[in-house]
Length: 542
Image 1 (cartoon, rainbow, N blue to C red):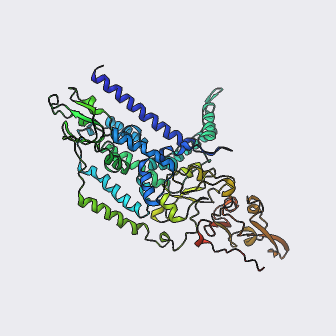
Image 2: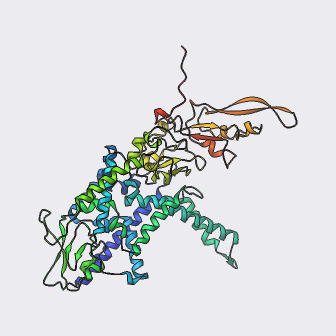
Image 3: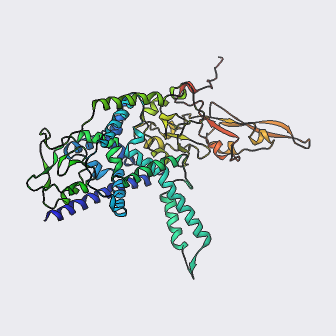
């Protein structure tokens, strides 16, 4: 087989593998939905468990990781042997960037150029240092930059809701217009598609997430950056790529260049995804190479090949990671400076509690929760009511995009424990349904200026009827009121029993007042936080 045919075979294999992992990733996103009487598959967490950056950062911040996260050692060993093949063959976000790069190459061919390594590619290593320093002090902000988490969050919180809106609005418009030719109607095609998507893909009708625009803008920006440099994110900013680059400094599979055959044409650099060479045909940097094999196919003289060697044998022509000691110290200092910025507010230091920061049941204490939570969005994706939403400012900068319950959007289902079952780092501890039903995540409170029986003198029993607690956390007291005409009548005014209320938010979700409900749930009385329990147990006088 000729080298050209061998290259195309290798390139086709790589693209096939990339497509398989991308489809697997997207498939796991789609199937992360509640199925009655079925526990979620452990496969839903697989991409997070094989991510060594999540394992390292979680261990540094919380000093513990789930045992399954040790699967990431497979990626570590694979990198030591083969180099950064995870970036070039497996990473789903890397595949998206590769696809975007190919698009820009075709759409804007003048942008194609021979790319050599740039000192700016060291930026990702300095970013990694700063993030790991922050993790040592308990700030898990790796979650903002990790590619697996970033792509999952972007897909779940921004891209899928956008697709859902387009499908729902488009099918509704077609249904109402009912276009057709004679007896044949377009709805014969669109309605089955819509029903399939509704029943098997979408979790909640008209699902949307607060602040999703910010996540979408960030994702779109890093994809568009491929128009400036192919795989811009992977080259300059990806902290996981930096971690794997450090591990791949001396891989067993290395590129070799025959000096007799090489004519310094530099075609190998034209298709290099990682800009892994310093000059034409030489000074290959294994820490920047994605193992895409484009260089071997571009060389018409057969001067480039990949061969096995022992890891302790240094390759003279290989470029190293030339990190400046001063810059590394600067990155460490930047991480330290970031700590007070993350915890500038009193709430971030545990002095006060945001009334609307209602964490999912099973969440650890706030400080421990933030040390573990990756803000991946998996718990939000699988929530059957859509009530789990990304945090914006309620938890400070440190808690950006972590989950909170917004009862006005969706309540916490009394019989559901899925969020704890799917959390990849156990920031939300997995609880049985029975144990979860005993956990208090907040406390309901009536607004007497809004609640219908209080403010308008009319009976309303919706909140009590929907309260899922078997012995009801909402009860009524009958009082006599007088209407505008002087007529007196008995009405029932609702009250909350703080000993029974678990803060599930059903009452707030079903309140007839949709603009601002007459009953709201606040974070007070949460089980996970002993300092946020203003309602003390009643003392037995005997």
